[in-house]
Image (cartoon, rainbow, N blue to C red; front, side, top):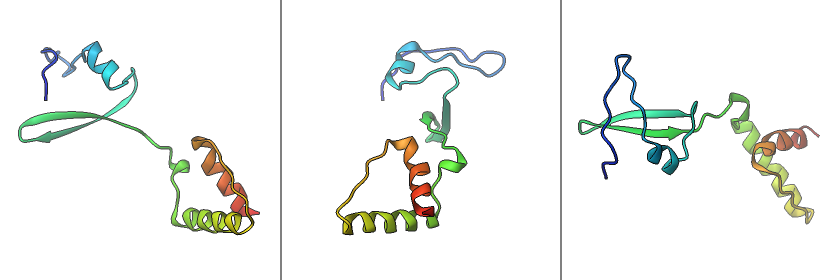
Length: 95
């Protein structure tokens, strides 16, 4: 662990993050972070928020497995960009 900068805690319990840390962690204003305390040390880590409708259920996963198995059997395969994949797979499973 390295120390980059020392900053004061403001009256509203706020701390300004050094620009170097923001760049290194690819953080931007409005991003979400998680705070954890370990051995009396505060650890802040970026988190990615996933919309509820983007989370796959067990039924979604089973449907994807069936779809992929069918595509392999038929000699087909499909590539879809990440965020569009869930919607695409759900539409295919309903057919």
